[in-house]
Image 1 (cartoon, rainbow, N blue to C red):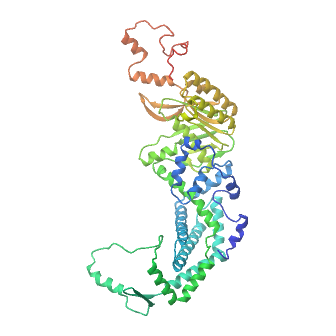
Image 2 (tube, rainbow, N blue to C red):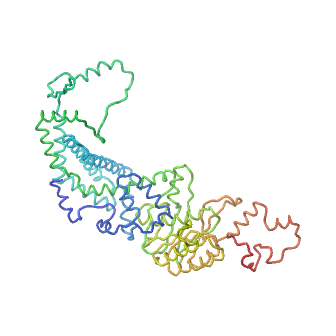
Image 3 (cartoon, rainbow, N blue to C red):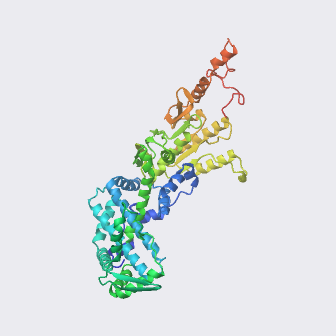
Length: 553
């Protein structure tokens, strides 16, 4: 926009605030989506990002931001502060109204190129500028008295106040108001006789529309439906209305000449700083809109304390966000879990019955660290989380017949790639790794893999059916998915910190179906105890030979 001092200051980029980063140029240059798309798929982050971005106009920016984790704790807190400010209902409504109005402005400007008639384009540009001035002035006034505590919105408040007071904006607002008032005072008459249209200045002729309405008012029976067409967002003008507009312009040359001059002067009226902030606001508003139904279902979100060192981490009353959104939409309850790593602890080994919530727990762990790294509020009542250099995942995939490799070989190749790339500052999430082989091989390979990860010092989750892996060392924390007491076939989907106890689950199922060791003896009429090593009960002191012991695989 001509005469805008803020535009002149934009050449170095230093005057434009950003709601995403204190150093927007550096962040934009470094912004990249993780090249391992399998991580997003394994953790269901792709579902979350797709749903958050939706069909919004700024979906590309929203997607890029949600896939780009930050590695600096202060950069994360910078975004958290904006989210916290937007938790205030009054401020949130003011920002949302501003966003809606600026959206209308963008729609108007896009439609200009589709309009074949000059006077239509000029009127539409004037209307867009009027909406823009209303949006900017209104938000500036509301931010001036709003309880803003974030660095980003405070900087934007100052920027907006300076912009509204600038000569460029005051000229735009004055000219827009003057042109609108001048055009609003134009009155003319249209007479249509056959295929001939006459337009003349209004000279006090009777207003027949008022006469018609008055005549038919006596037949009124309650409120009538409004059939008036409004073209605010999708204008229409055919060749007849365009010709009428041209005739009106000839009758009022001063007003339309001034309008044409106005359009030349203010053709680029949208300030770049405001354009950027409006675009970045969509990230915050879209994410808050996505988690709103989950909050309405009674689940909590928090702003985690983030750290760049892999020390103590924890989360309380947390859950898988993608799953929770689906369950909340369906009106179903959501199971929450807690976790914590303290001191030397680095890796959760999760065991328990199938379909008991182990994979969901692993996804939750990964989702929380990713969303925390983006600066979003995360599922849970409280959390302290780590900012990793990378997040690696290995979830079971369908066998690729075209690759000419077996499932185990494919697992080993993928695991090898992870181990070569991971560092002590990484997070590694492994779900049912080596499940395609025997229990003995799974135990051997799992032991080697966990030993490597413990030496590396990476944080992680290892989901397995091999209980022995949960007690490999002090860096390992055993977690178990639990069952309903007295009903081993029913899962609670709670994952708790406790020693692996697969045998207890098996005994519970055997007891439910009345096939325990003692009951089988009674049914078979066995009076003497079976020799040790033959009965297969918990008292066996020596393992059976491989291939004879009835491994769960």
